[in-house]
Length: 131
Image 1 (spheres, rainbow, N blue to C red):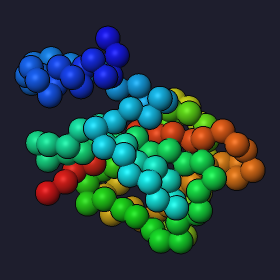
Image 2 (cartoon, one colour):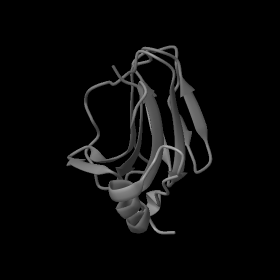
Image 3 (tube, rainbow, N blue to C red):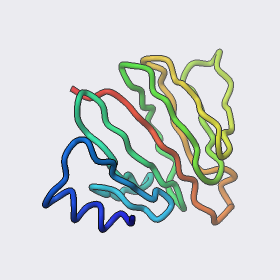
């Protein structure tokens, strides 16, 4: 069943006991937001958590650091992702498809497509708590 069919069902007859299918590499999501540092597709928001996919392609490297108050799992689905950390005792790491990193709470970092000259997008899934 395709995303569009599932979304049609969701809007008219969806209940919490039926799965919703998203094809992340086709950029399917409930909402999509574009910025100079990447594209974010919201997959789920509720019960204190949010799940998103993030696409990095020809993006600027964010000069700021981000962090979450709880553990932040990040799973790379496509391409390679370079992660840098504000803490000098943590070495940068490069993640490939299938790699999952569990960032401890308040770990300030930034992530971007690697190597920078490749044309292929990097896509990763992140799940974090929301208030």
